[in-house]
Length: 195
Image 1: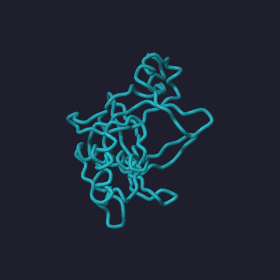
Image 2: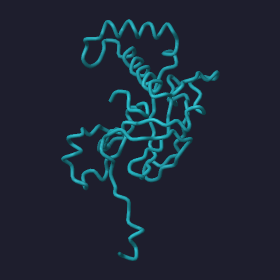
Image 3: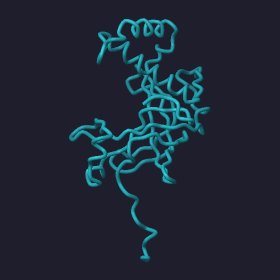
């Protein structure tokens, strides 16, 4: 045994795409190129036309913990009964459409509502905040399973793209070194839900 064995660097790169147990935490801090303090919160976006419900999550894999977040962007009007009825009608009209709906705004809102549905199915209670958005205090400490996909940054951009499970399996550790996990869905702790 070497003198410095206790100081080995943690392996770089993402965990394989899968569901992992996690707990919603109040906040965490990152370092590096995109250093920031991430908080579990629901707030208006910078341009003020939509809101972000952001969950900070401590994900666990074989005793190792990583902090990630999952953000659901939504327009506040999707919480009204009238808009939800419009979305239900659109879901019926466009049920056979592959790809983008003719009304992309309705499709965007439908996707936001489906993410809220997934949160509720996973045991999260989404309570309206009288000041707008959702109350987040009751979400902190909640346990669930979170699906962590693998992504990589698009060169010359702040965008990222998804890595398929097959690409992940074929990649070398060197290729994976700059890839990262991104939470894309939530499931009840007993595993119910969808990918």
